[in-house]
Length: 295
Image (cartoon, rainbow, N blue to C red; front, side, top):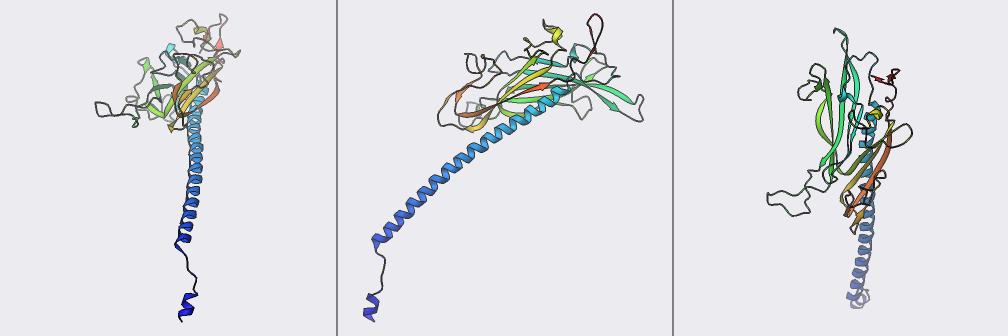
């Protein structure tokens, strides 16, 4: 019996330690691979998120620009300077604002039992930017107990209705119309929003036409609106900080080439979505022999 017990093979302490060491090495390799894969996955998802959010907003703006200047044939609303189909206001202070666009178009409300049955309407949609109010919790708390906001913009959208009797735009809270609304944030983490008016020859109209400025004759000659939306990731993406230049439709004063710029030196990922929106309802107005536009 004693001889039989002595013949049973065992595992020495050294062999156990070697096994543990091999297991630790394998687990370390697996963890490193997981970290690399997880980092790559996060980068891919971050790119997809900012790309998708940017494209959704640009698609919304394009649809509204395509409606600019639309009106029904029998529309009897008196046209004023307030009804200019597209008004672009260029940014003058890159630290506090982006470009702004006002889009005006007509609609009709049908009431079978009403008199008249058709009531013509006019709406104005506005897109503009404000400094983001999202707190940046990576920075120290301020003396008032709050975090400073992130260094980005939020895009706001509003829709108002024309009050024909008063000759002005209704306050959405007073017009009893469910289709109108005051300023609402539609996307955050925006670096810049740019609008350029383009004429029938493909040339930029600068400054953008308004009913009262030197380019007023081009107000109904806008054929397309070039849009550039620059959005950034919610979290830092790159390991090192550097100047993140972006395409600003050729505007070197804001793309990182000049001193007064919207380009930032940081670690965030950015993507610029660029598209041209066709203002299909402009240029279709009748004209008199004196070349006066009839709306």
